[in-house]
Length: 100
Image 1: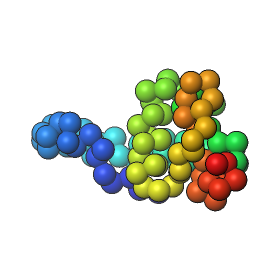
Image 2 (image 1 turned 90 degrees about the vertical axis):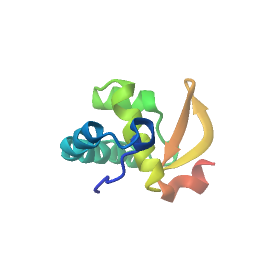
Image 3 (image 1 turned 45 degrees about the vertical axis):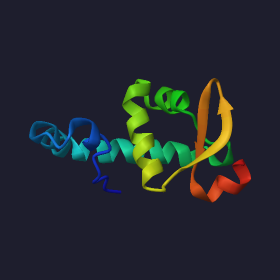
């Protein structure tokens, strides 16, 4: 998995320093996305929330919410209409119908 799109590009208006920062953390972001995706997949139809992902990975919610957004944008995970502990639940696409 190689995350190439800077989902914050609109926010920083293609600022050169922001674009360079995005490129400098690409490897770390790719590894973080893989870890988030692996956890979500491991939860099957139960899915996972940002709070659950963060707790499992030992990270803050702010460290996983961006990766979750990137995975959603790439179609690697799907939002459900369920909520748990005040958070939306996402699943891997193969569990989308089961989780609905």
